[in-house]
Amino acid sequence: VAGGTHFGYWYRMLETPDGPSFAMYPSFCPHRQPFGRFFNNSVHSVGRFGVWIFPEYAPTIDGSCSADSPYQAVFDRLTSWRNNRGIEWVMSSTIQIRNTVVFDNHDTGIRCVTAINHQSLNRPNLRNTFYFENN
Image (cartoon, rainbow, N blue to C red; front, side):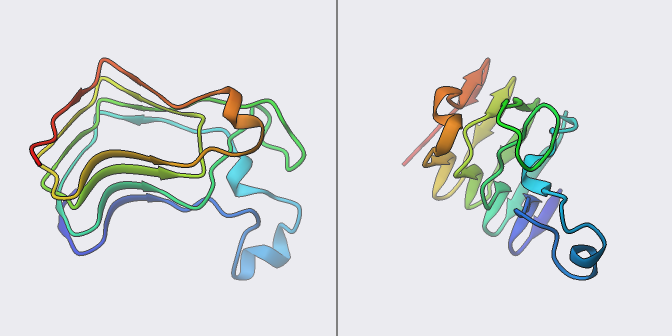
């Protein structure tokens, strides 16, 4: 992703689908679905967030609404620079940032906002990640 006013990548995982999908899938919980693959992506010169995970994302192994077995969401080989914020996740703690380079972002490079529910036992973590804050 190169350039933009708001988001490079936005993971908007709601508790229930919205719009016409709500009527079709009333018992589907997007915020519980296992994470797919985020690998070897880059984002720069985005107005607000290079990567934004909001609102709560609480992936589970089987993805059902009542599941409580956390599933690790791995963001691997992200390069994020010259955004307002490089990567931020909100109310989610099963996030792992791996092999990532984050630099020259205006406000914040990497930011985790709160941890809730059962996920507080599975804290977010950084693996082989370079983070440079020049403020």
